[in-house]
Amino acid sequence: MFNFPYKKKSSKGSKNLVAKENILVNEIPEHVAIIMDGNGRWAKKRSLPRMAGHREGMKVVKKITKLASDIGIKVLTLYAFSTENWKRPKDEVNYLMRLPVEFLSTFLPELIQENVQVRVIGDQSMLPDYTVNAVKKAVNETKQNTGLILNFALNYGSRTEIVEAVKNILRDREDGKLHIDDIDEQLFSNYLMTKKLKDPDLLIRTSGEIRLSNFMLWQLAYTEFWFTDVLWPDFNEHHFLEAIREYQQRIRRFGGV
Image 1 (spheres, rainbow, N blue to C red):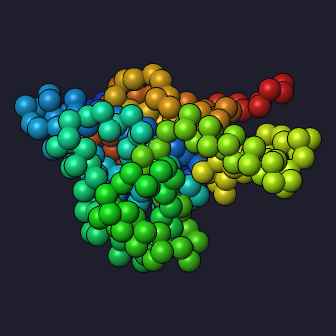
Image 2 (image 1 turned 120 degrees about the vertical axis):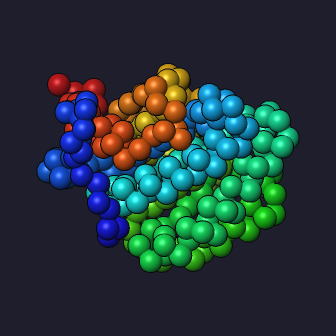
């Protein structure tokens, strides 16, 4: 496991800090999904280019991945680039396409060593070759790992995912592989990009926005949501543990009593 030294700190206002050891005595969510929002606003507040915020956000990904692995989370899905993000300025998009290359080239040896498996969901056909190659390398070199699944949503859009699932179900129906009565929620889920993953138990969104932004619309049906005003580059291990603590205090009935 990662040798992660996070402890409850004694400083002004620290009474609300969450100790990792207190989290571990209760149920840990198996799958945590994060909408990492606020990089651009973080940079703007400091009169920096937006790319500086994205670079700082990449450092946070490393910290949260380490902590997630350390406390026993099985899947961490990160919304890295949406199908709508292509609308951003070209120089920013180009920079965002380079980030996976930089992140994986520097962090991959540690991911391998710590038994983390890298996966990707999203349409890779529109990504530059250098991005695709970096992603494929990480996926291939970690596919035998059995620890935390680090799942990047890259050029991902949930509505597109659902539409493609419907198309594939119709194709299989036309080919005689399916009967109409075979189609239920479980079968539909198996046509999604996340078919091999449990639905998220907890969704975290940073930066104060309270919406899903076309992220895992089917999979989040019974997920617990946790929103924070903290911008992603300022998000730290304490915030992550705080979200998990609140998750642990909720009662999940799934429609029952």
